View (cartoon, rainbow, N blue to C red):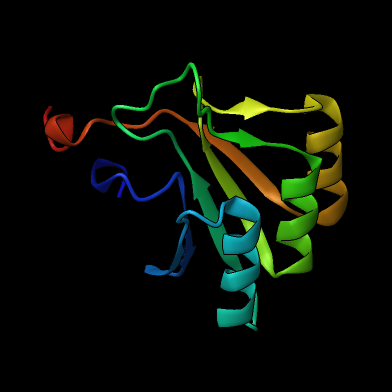
Length: 117
C-alpha cells in the first residue's frame, strides 16, 4: 500500500484488509475499522511508506493509539521497528499491557527480497 502513497496504516481481520488509512489519519481509520468489524479482534499495522520523508511525516503511535484500539475492538498493533516513533514509550507499553493490546515491532522486508534464500 505504501508504494501507492495511500497512508501509513491498515487494519486487518484474519487475512482481510478492512480499512486503509487515508487523509483522515490513523485515529479516524481505527474508528472506521471498529465500525466495520464489530466483533473486534482486528490488527492495526503501521509502517513508513517505501519513500517516506522521515523529516516531515514519521509513523507515530502513543497512548492515544492504544486507547483507540481498545475502544474500537483492535487486539494488536504491529509497527515497523526502527521507523516508528513511540510517544511516551513506557506509558504506551504499560497501557497496552493493561488493555490487552499486543504490540509487535518488526522490520519490513523489501518486496524484492521476499522469497530469496
